[in-house]
Image 1 (tube, rainbow, N blue to C red):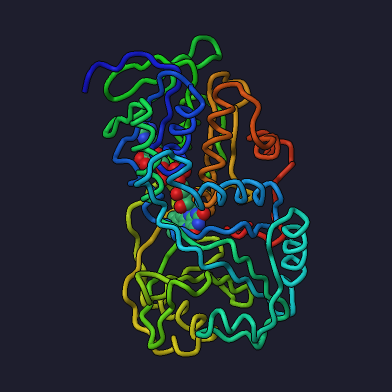
Image 2 (spheres, rainbow, N blue to C red):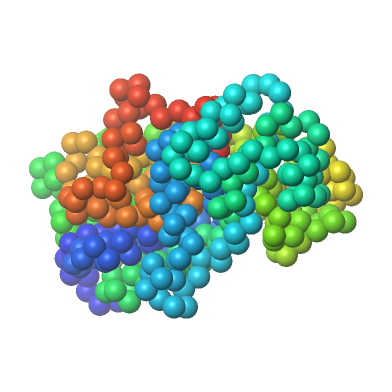
Length: 397
Ligand SMILES: Cc1cc2nc3c(=O)[nH]c(=O)nc-3n(C[C@H](O)[C@H](O)[C@H](O)COP(=O)(O)OP(=O)(O)OC[C@H]3O[C@@H](n4cnc5c(N)ncnc54)[C@H](O)[C@@H]3O)c2cc1C
């Protein structure tokens, strides 16, 4: 690698968020931009994502970021200005159903809020829902929301596409380099100490996900991020979960399951509850025990009767960067001028990544941001202004 000269903006972390920030910095004319990744682009938690895209949120700020991001996913190649770019988007829609009980009002309110924000959401009868997702039963549903403009995409592909497009716009993407510390002049950040030497920078953007705890040592400012491991299963049932069938969120299941088509006809399924908190940030694979498979399998069979006979085709684990309110921290860090952060996505950052990349780039450049970042400020935790969703803890937020 050539000696690293100073630059205008350094982005630490080449996941889907950092790659989006880097591309948006270049698109906004940021000057010399450098993206540092200690492993490979996309190799962190982005590679573990279930890839679901929806604007369904109970927190209106998230609806807005998701809406802006969906607009990008829909025309990803055009947006990047690269005819060959793809997000791997499948526009199958999103169904969310609640029975009578504690989640019903939350769903009703969230759907009404989405509609008031101009999003195309409908309520369906059980028969209408079953026509879209015939492998599921809906006889217990008190309310079913349908968002036709939703689906899933490939988070790794989106990260690598943003990174490639950023390189073509002049961003230096350097893999295999560890950011070790921030160098400061007084309070202000003036660059990054790395495993390959010092890089002077006007602004540093940290998109380090679970590793954002490193910022505590670098700045002395607490970053309330817990690393939480979650399990994902791929099931092969006697009936296919085809790509045309909508993603499904089951608010009736004890685990608040989400499911989607996977690999052509399998079902990808995971729980929407808090996961296993890890003592240190670590995204290596954990165990998926037979007990856990049986526990999720029983819930799947309850909703998708033919999947009572399903086989386990694959399983893996992934780690969420969870904040106390299950929503991200976006924007400048108080008391550390020159540092902007984007982390704490709490298991729902992929669907926000295009819009988040743009607002973080705007914040880094001192430009007005597309949406106000105040609700996502780090200070909210100390000030008791948590950005809590109506569904309680969990990535539906
Ligand atoms: C199992 C699972 C399922 C999910 N499903 C969904 C979903 O359906 N929909 C959705 O919207 N979201 C989902 N998410 C969340 C979404 O995937 C994440 O929010 C998103 O991918 C995070 O991207 P990131 O760039 O913040 O983090 P990462 O991809 O983890 O990137 C951070 C990068 O920073 C690098 N790094 C850290 N510290 C340093 C350092 N000091 N020096 C150099 N490099 C450093 C790391 O190596 C890493 O590559 C899911 C997540 C998981 C784990």
